[in-house]
Image 1 (cartoon, rainbow, N blue to C red):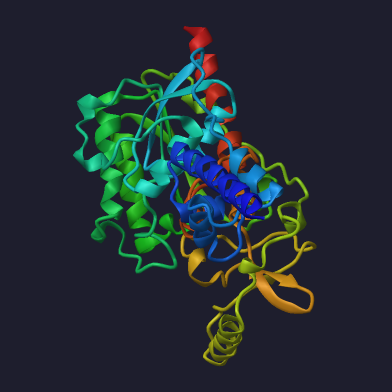
Image 2 (tube, rainbow, N blue to C red; image 1 turned 180 degrees about the horizontal axis):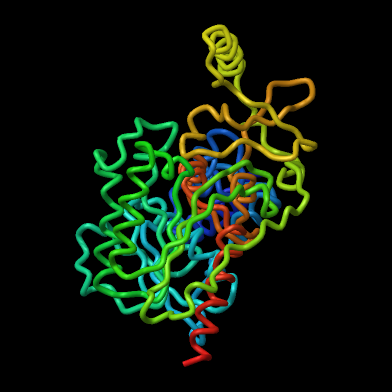
Length: 394
């Protein structure tokens, strides 16, 4: 009996060591690993116990941990046709849209948030440089394409709409500084739809004029993610520019036509979702109460329910982690649930291989701040057509 207990303890300690070594290789906290492999609420405590040799995971749980990917899924290809830089990179959604063309290579990236940088490194194998305001333009390599989703809170309908009065709004001028110094052949910038109408159009007028004064032909369009094969009603403005001198055929550029692929929310939903995503009675009661009060006061804000048959969801925001009110999934016989981080990833059109190496809270922030990858990819293909024609005509 004693020998059996000893053997069991040794087995638990051995498994605990395997789990800890794997977690350290992944550079994850216990909370991040627990969320990444889908453990129940307070899964970090469970990981801590396992690593200490107290108890052990089931075979399925152990496999989920030990088989968690360590290889970088979206590394650079050396034989790419064009080089690019990725500013305000977040988790690299814009980069990914270009990279999926198989024709671009990132030579520099910048991201100030340490958790987003962690996700970026897990997927692309590179640690982004930090605060772009502290990086001299001479440190940035020459490149063909510049991409950047400069922070949009300053122009968002959900924010205070201060625009250039907000320091985050002035970060656009970091892009101007780098374009002026490096003269990329082309750029793609992404922002909230409200940028175009902010301050009666004056804000966007300043941005467009600034870019045109640098010698770039500037085009813009507003697209909805739901028109490009992902079930999310996310509207964003996309600003494309070409250097008039180095890309003489710039006028041939056309934005892509929306694919209008039929999708539904059911296309992104996971099966057998953990109960930890079901919202509590207190939160559900609060959502319902606030919706009634808002309706009484003539406000349109409140929770929104969706199911597998819904054609699309609302826009997922960076604040989704707080209460999930903008996208709740109906569940029969119980309270609705929040979407999972993987479902949030799918709502933005990220491939299944995309690694989520952070806690649920950080993952929600990251996908809420990111871009709809299929929209970027469609625009990227159109931009490359122009650059290709220019290249072959020289």
